[in-house]
Length: 229
Length: 72
Image (cartoon, one colour):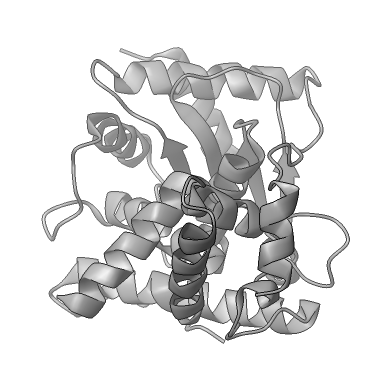
């Protein structure tokens, strides 16, 4: 399982610490969910590719059920409309020391909702250590200001709260599209493109994995840059 | 200045909130206050029971490509 702990880092490069933590979390949770549901860990052909469940019913395990194994976690779908806010996650420690987590997802597109839910659920696997926690009014408002700025990329001068929130996107990407799947995804993309020159191969692969096509394209392009760079 | 968001988050801390994180889609001209207002609106909707079912898949792969993938 991934290293589900977050000691107050002594590593001077905090961003690297959180990136490794999130990638380890994504890898560990994806492995557990795939094994429980009979999804190949390393699919070798397109026909073996499956959607990795995030919160859906009918699966032995999901990312949400793993979070629930650690602490009571509820997922709510409000009918509200929002222009900016797509999802959020709250962790409470009740007076009896019980931990309760609330995940709220506003997005109504299935693939985007899965992506946002996965991103927020990543936080459930980071231990409560008070270091990257948004646990004062000032920290919460600073976090929202950083997120509103949008272009603020995380770096060592960025607050731990913002860093962890930003790298959770990376965790979601790696949970939904595991690293070991990329060779098969690349091969399937090439084969669909060859057989159906007018088809959008990225779109059809995204329909298998039930991920936003934008997220899939970004993930595959980035991985291929690393491979060939 | 004590805003409605300040009051809400203070109440959450008093109820045991120890952490909160957000997924936000930003763009030009987005303010932190606009996001705070959306949090408040969402919390109000939830407290009033405005809840929907989880979204379901609508986009489907064309049959010929689905057959190709199944044989891959």
